[in-house]
Length: 310
Image (cartoon, rainbow, N blue to C red; front, side, top):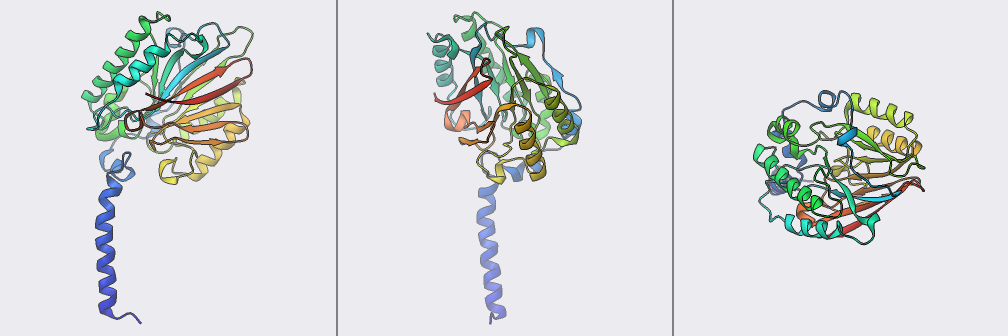
């Protein structure tokens, strides 16, 4: 039988353990706990009331081949005190733009969130300077594309300290829920690309309902981007927090020709092969110095992803 003194000692040890573990939990790279302390703005139902369809000059130049590539980066965390490796990425990207295999030339870049470390304007300015370096490299390459497209979605860090006010005015394409369709070869149907607002760890009812309706009405093969993983490595801490929402998304992906889902947030490479589509949580640009080169084949309606070190 435990005496009152024993119980008191156990409680004391438990308190000491919690005091040790709590700071470690709060200091993780994408802290779920501090997120709610630093965030105080609208959720996805307010931000993503309707989808923005990108058209015309907002579309990437994917060339005329039915096979083309693009790059996915995740969690660049501009403003973090950690050492940056932007030069390494720009160097790799510049070389890749001159690839003899033109199907491997990156035609656009997708950033799946946590662009800003704490939601500040200075961090947004630093990211835009980085994007300007990318566009300069593209303009001087065989692409000759000074309007090179870099598509960005919201992460939880982007919303810290009322960061949505900064993000929506500073980060292209200035909206949190959007899509476009791209077709290189006139004999194919091309692909549809969907960019989701999961910055709160949920899509919210409005966005989720609209997204399902659009998937059902869209006959093209599809690629989807989200900051929070739907499943990936199956680590609950790093996924969308509502298991019902996750299950509904996985079912919709399987039924509506989704070929690939790209995510970020957990900073490590987690992949999962479902029966009809693939899911990849891309490693952190800042902390892992990696990205993903994705090659799309319109003729076969497939996409494959390769991890790149820079």
